[in-house]
Amino acid sequence: MEKRIFIFILIIIILAGFIGYFLVLKPGEKIGKKIEEQKTRKILLYYYNPEKDKDETGNIKCSRGGLVAIEREIPVTKTPIQDTIKLLLKGKENLTENEISQGITTEYPLEGFSLSEVNLKEDGTLILKFNDPLNKTVGGACRVGILWFQIEATAKQFPEVKKVQFLPEELFQP
Image (tube, rainbow, N blue to C red; front, side, top):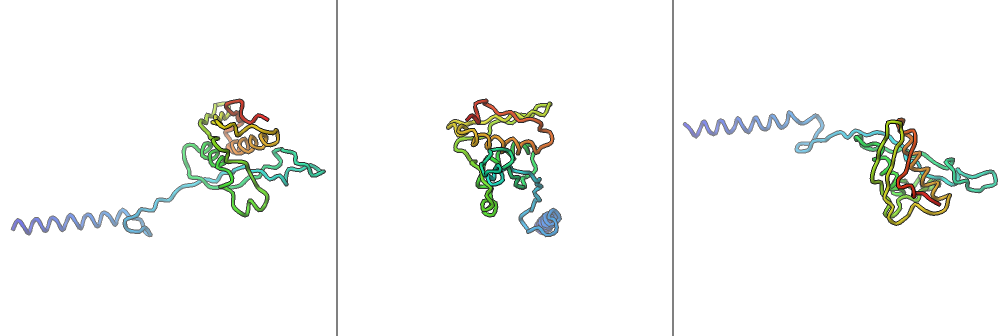
């Protein structure tokens, strides 16, 4: 008799487990795998197109006029500004063949260059602290200006960012 009760209880437990397992799955999910919908948000990464930044005689102006916004999607997190800047710093690996063929370019990534801190002040000043142990952000005025403009424009797409400050101050020097 005890053996029958044990088997009956065991069958009830197994059935309850199966029923509970299948009730947790949503329609369309594969058994054994839960498909979680990842929420994303659209952001802009600013790259450079020298063909869009020429004066009337064809000289490159090295201005913000050559910036081109490229739309991407990133996961929704608590740090969208930081996530977006880090994605921009990955540089060319984010560009499609089609975008490259249109003349869109960037010097990012820069070897050893990385974002270490992001701090948004109440007045809208975004302080971005970088590591640049190999001094990859120095060079000619045109080059460093474009590097600066790309980060600044990418950061300023966020309405809470009014001004961008870079640390250390020696970054982006001609």
